[in-house]
Image 1 (tube, helix red, strand yellow):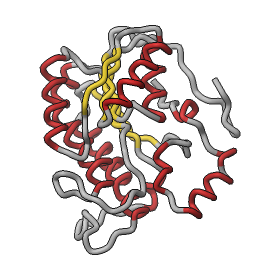
Image 2 (tube, rainbow, N blue to C red):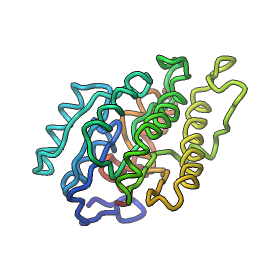
Image 3 (cartoon, rainbow, N blue to C red):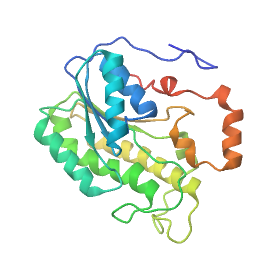
Image 4 (cartoon, helix red, strand yellow):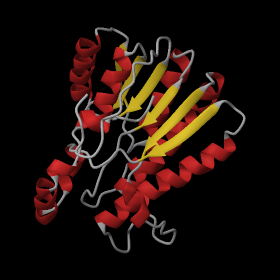
Length: 246
């Protein structure tokens, strides 16, 4: 495995044969690299993504990398609760178990917009969408115990606060604050879920993957883009960002 500037990248040879994994946003970035690693170790991978063309390309790449056929791509638009419900219904119907759910997909510092259900896009996709998805799959996950739920958050949560008086940023919109709010919501959701799942055999985690060079950076403004280019030696690529610890 490659090294980061400060420490050796994590790796594992533990086999995951017989495990079923759903990863949201696994058509690109650290989600795709995670899928490649878990597939190579024997897990059945379900890529859940909005862009099916990119998803099919990622599925082919994951199969070639892992040498395994147990990878499939399914449509999931986390900005639309109808799509989330349809995806969850299909998983509950077709999959006898779900060992690992990785809530990885997200948007970052994007221009103001709303989901199909009227939520500000960052809180809607990063938190609300994954909240609903987890809720709809929770019974299946419980029946699959021991199992785990992993939500990719960010250290940006430390700068966030939950503005209950304007959760959808309709009065004013600061894209960085909205992102931090969504990542804080990820952490609080994970902590609450962990308490509720005590004794069930299901464990839940939130994590900061590091500062990783991914497509999420595309909405940064000019000065931010310049700063990230200067900081590139101190950041991770997508492969190095995939050390969740399975």
